[in-house]
Image (cartoon, rainbow, N blue to C red; front, side):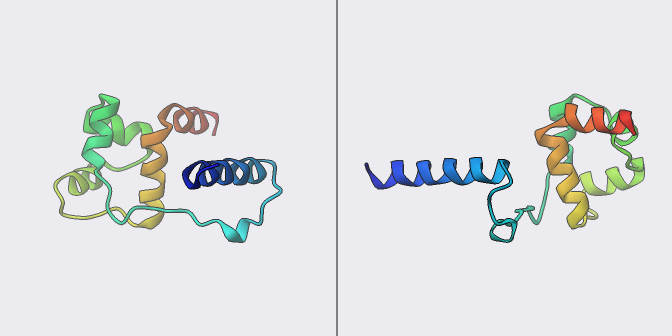
Length: 98
């Protein structure tokens, strides 16, 4: 088996172990990007600024500042935006249930 195949196999085995709760959680780190393109996320969802802000709990003014590059979201907010980008329906479902 080649090096690439071994790496893929190891990654899959680690993912399965992690999903079953058999992995050491200290061995895994969450990667949150230092910058995030909020406007691109909103555009992919086809929402206006007002819709996006209302749907996900942001103020419209804050959203505008992010999109204009006047401010950057802080760490936890970047993580939340990343989840919105990757799984918007899951976030919406979770927020509706709250």
